Structures are given as structure tokens and as C-alpha cells.
Image: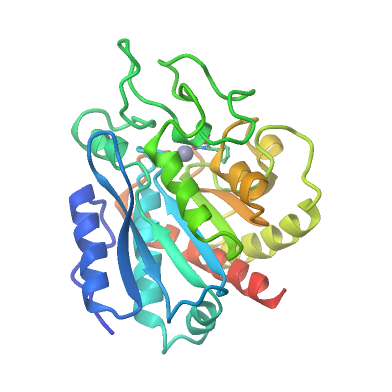
Amino acid sequence: LHSGRAFDFENYHRYSEIEAFVNELAATNPLVSSSIIGTTYEGRGIIMATLSTGSSPTKPVMYFECAMHAREWVTPATCLWMMNEVATKYGTDAEITAMLDYADWLITPVSNPDGYEYTWTTDRLWRKNRTPNGGLCYGTDPNRNFDAGFGGPGASGNACSDTYHGPSAFSTEEASAFRDVLAANRGRTVAAITIHSFSQLWMSPYGYQNALPTDYAEMFRVMEISVNALTATYGTQFQYGNIADTIYIASGSSTDYAYMGEGVLYAYALELRDTGVYGFELPPDQILVTAIETFNGLKAMAKEIAAK
Ligand code: ING
Ligand code: ZN
């Protein structure tokens, strides 16, 4: 098992390079396959890697998704690094082996490739997708476009806003692709993790309201174990708790949808490094440490879920 070695994980990459990496890993590593889970407004395929030792209709699934927001560049870098770790260390690393024996890992490194490419070509701090809204302003925020309190507080009806929720729930290809991955794995998905930056947070539902879910105690238990493992790596501090109280009220998010719409108990939203010194423009020399600490947190999470 090899491949991926030529890819430079310590730098940021254009979407075409990311696609090429995923496809090469799939072509050379029997644990990996690639698929297109949706096609964006500008015609890009949203590529997903499936890491599996051999699937069955009852095997649990864990879904990981990065760069739903275009400017959060450390997140696709982290998703790619984790993908390579799982793919290349299965069979030699005991923890990774047990993890993949328990569940298939599905990883979408760039959920919003149109926005991501726009941050390379035109506006480094673009957040949304690139759908036209009929006026001068472009883009819907895919993380306000899910059918979970859609159009409520913490989302905007103004097409020029960075948190524009769009004309209707699932109007965006980015949100509907996520929805369809969960629907295709209904009854099997034990975790759905959406990875953002920045602020160093690990969060659970709800985002659309301050009231806590009935499952909050269990969500919190696993969150705390995960954050402790993350922090044990390099001492990076993360705050954790429900979305609405930890960051802000936000309706129509993928995390609330995974829990409310599909019953995924471990639905978490992460905000990776840093706390604002570099913000979205995290220097490439922090990619590896960010990916390693995040993966340690997620491995601890996976271990807890498997032990339940
Ligand atoms: N933060 C997230 C956002 O979409 C979030 C926070 C996560 C809200 C999950 C709701 C659900 O605003 C960033 N940085 O995008
Ligand atoms: Zn984000």
C-alpha cells in the first residue's frame, strides 16, 4: 500500500490537483474508491473518497466533509492528509486498522469546489458557492441551505450576505450532495463531521436554537474525550459545546440536518486553527500540525463510537 507520497501535504492546492490526488489514491490503493456526489453550478464534480475494507449493508459509516466554505483552506488540506493516513496505515497502525474494521470512512475534501477555486483566482476570502442570485450579488451559503430550521435566525435572506440561505432548502448542489450521501447510507451513518476554520471549536447541535437536544449528554461526553485527545497532541486549546452557545445561532446547517433529519447522533462541526492571528489564511507550515491534532481528536471520537 503506497501512493500519495508524491503529493505535497504541507501546501495548499488547486481543486484539479486535489481531484488528481484522490483519483490516484483510488487507482493505487485497494481500500480507496472515488465517486462524484454532485455537480456544481459551474460544472465541477464534488469528489468523495470511500475508505473501506469491504462494505456490507450494515457496516457503520462515518462521514467527514471539508471546505463547505471556500476560504477555509486548512480544512481540505486536513481532509486530504487524514485520507492518506487511513489509506496508507491500515494494516500497520493498530488504531487505524481497528477504526476502519469498524466503519467505512467517507471523506469529501472540498464540498464547495466552485467557491474554493474562486478563492484562488479572484477573492481569497470568498465564503459561499458561486450561484447567481439574479442581481449583482453571487452565492448562497451552503451551511445555511439545509432543511433544518431553514430560513430562521442566524441566516440571511439578503443575496449579498455571506450567510445568504438561498431561495429554498437544498437549492444548492453542495447541500444536496451532503444530504444525498446521508440518504444513501441511511441507518448506517453513525457520525457526520463538518470541518470549518477558524476559532478552535468542537460543536454539536443545535445551531438553530439555544435549547439543547435530548441526546446532548452523550454528544457532550464524546466531544470532551475528542477534544482532550486533540489538545494532548500539541496543547492546542479548543472550546466545545452546542453550536448556538459556543459560536452563534445559525439555522439551516448540515450539522443540525444530520441530527434532526437523519438521526445521526454524533453530528459535529469543527472549527480548526487558529484563533484569529492568521484566520482563514493559516500559513502552510501549520497544515501538518493542524491535521495531526484534528485526526487525533477524530480517532478518539471514532474509538468511543465503536465502543458504544
Ligand atoms: N463557521 C460555521 C458557520 O457556518 C457553524 C459555524 C457550524 C454554524 C455548524 C452552524 C453549524 O458559520 C464558519 N467559520 O463557517
Ligand atoms: Zn465555515
